[in-house]
Length: 103
Image (tube, rainbow, N blue to C red):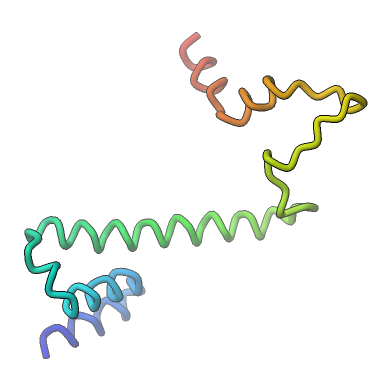
C-alpha cells in the first residue's frame, strides 16, 4: 500500500519518469542488491534525462527549422560549394568556444 501511495504522489508532483523507474525497481528483484543511494540516484537520473530530452525536443520544435532532419553527416562537399570539411568538423565539436575562453 505504501508503494502505491508513493507512486501516486510522484505522479501528482509530475515526476512520471521517476515513478515509472520506482515501479520497475519494485517489480525487478535485481534492484534489491543496490544501496538506497544508488536506487534513488537511478530514479533521479532517469527523471533528469527525460526532462532534458523533452526540453531539447521542445526547443527544436520551436526553432521552426527549414530542414529539421539536417545533420552534419549529410553535408555534401561538392567542389562548387567551396566548403572546408576540416573547418566544419572543427566547428561541429564546439571546441572553438573553449579555445576562446582560454585566450
